[in-house]
Image (tube, rainbow over all chains, first blue to last red; front, side, top):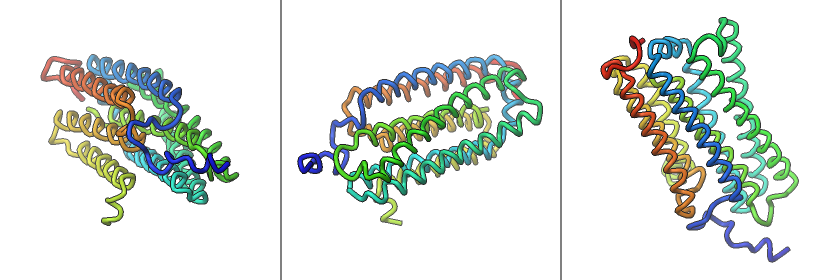
Length: 198
Length: 98
């Protein structure tokens, strides 16, 4: 047990070290390639239907987009703080920060539900036009990633509360954190493309 | 404030918030036209790079992994920028701009 608690590489990120499980990084690369293809499909279609895309974009609630961007940025911050707390062996802070990250993940979902409801009530759907097809498909696929990420964070929060990160390696926590940051990274581009670029 | 800025995590968060606010303001300013689009994409790239290097901790990761994610950022942003530029009405793209 002592041998495990004395693992030296948990104090701080070390040069030339990949945080978390290598397999999650292969998965992250695959996800980025898939979303990258979506982004390019969006911008190519936009170029041929500029008026439709610009007019439809005006009907989006940009404030909701900004709020959700700030929510994910802050949630990622909380996850990094949780990891820092685990590395500096402050166990009670790990679950606190993970709890903040989970709450923000749920807040993102609620804002999205509010946004979708407003669109459906206005008679808009993914069949309305090409812009809305992209808007609903891309944000719903991303939302599924947010839901999955929040479940992962909840599993880690439970483990943290049970003392699972009080000692020993933190690879599991790093793996979940990396996935959550990818969700944040993808939203940064979705926000710019769908809500801002005119 | 100094303590806040000395912590990489807090500093990254603050930069991301400022960058988000800047893009929001850019969209409000109708005078900027297509320039706002180029700046919006440049800011999205900068924000993405902060997430990759600081939040994902790839700044100190093996070169292969850092290059893969940074390469994705550069490639995706460059393609979007190019298609965006040639899709602008002044370059003969699309229908009438809204």
